[in-house]
Image (cartoon, rainbow, N blue to C red; front, side, top):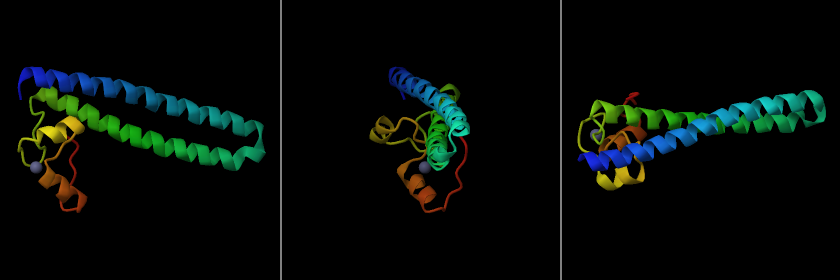
Amino acid sequence: MDKKRLEQFKKRLETRQQELRRLVSRNVQDGRAADEQAAQDIADKAANSYTKEFLFHQSHNDRQLLQLVEDALERIRAGSYGECVNCGHELNAKRLDAVPWTRYCINCQEKVEQGLLEESSI
Ligand SMILES: [Zn+2]
């Protein structure tokens, strides 16, 4: 991949990384605020635990995505960005454009979704 294109992906990934970091830390704070409110009003307890559960799942997804984005930035540093982490084939340019933290080529992604391939962290 040429340097200019790589630089563009890096910028997009870094922007996303910052957004996600903000989201993840805000969710932690919201969770704490929900705790404090619950201590004040027991009637709201059910609503509160629902809110906390929602926030937990939300931040879990954000965290997972953040991990994928950070892995992608790591691959840029390692010089392996744009290749499938499983088979090493070059990733489809459109696919990479749509989802810059993509790790797998289409073939390997299908295998992952069918449970035929163990997901690796990088
Ligand atoms: Zn592959």
